[in-house]
Image (cartoon, rainbow, N blue to C red; front, side, top):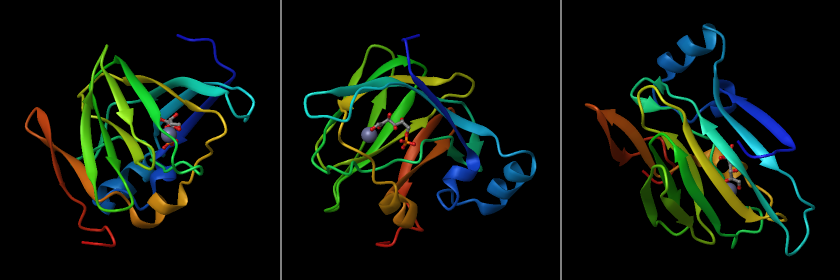
Length: 176
Ligand code: F6R
Ligand code: ZN
């Protein structure tokens, strides 16, 4: 574990509207709104030259056939890049820019994934029973724009297939 200043938990309710299977979503909500992921941050001043880093822990689980995942966001300073490094478990970093490009990069221990400037990103735990733990670092003054993804979702979704996963079009995305 790293030393951290801030710990936050996000429950399923924070992902309202992001999962296609609304019956499965409501069932989990009725059973107690589970914690889907947690973030441990090393805070630094929001100033030029500073870096914010920490650990993201996405628990294992699914809502219907879609896996537990983070809300996902663009950065408020949109041309901010970010590096993720796999620490534990298996996941997919789903990314898209605002012009129609997308990518789904696998993340596993000792593998780094680069989120280019201008790309929204979401971490998805594709494992059955293990936490997905990643280390992240980005400029400390970047800020977060959650609203765009809350409104339109990502273009792609990641679904369970057998013991693995597949990437499909998001039928609820505004442009599909
Ligand atoms: C920061 C970053 C990560 C995420 C974390 C939780 O820019 O990308 O620290 O914040 O994985 O995901 P969100 O912020 O989408 O709830
Ligand atoms: Zn980010």
